[in-house]
Length: 119
Image (cartoon, rainbow, N blue to C red; front, side, top):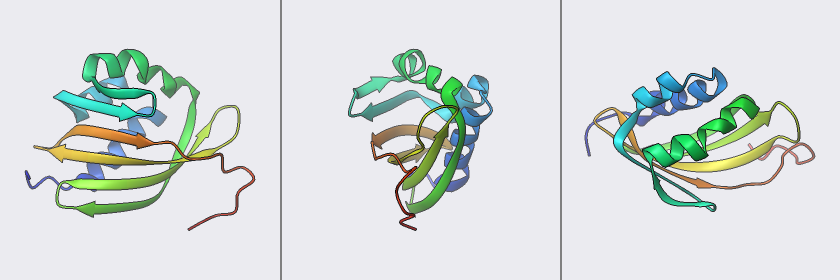
């Protein structure tokens, strides 16, 4: 535990995608950052930027629905609106240390275009 409050850091993470600012995202991620998803098993920072960062070009906006924080960790439920195609909802687990995102684990959700709000 580092005393970092994850909420504002997580919000900045999503803003970096919306604004297409790789420099902003680089500043938020620790040097030993790890990323996992159903398609990625604990990939490092360099692999994350080559494999995942290009998705920013498809993003119109994120709408954070809920953040559940405990100490330096948080779960985030969000809806992503891509430039084309259906909106979808995912959950991500964040671990923050020393003011930097150390780990993200993504759990893919479903499209939300035809789904009723679960808020």
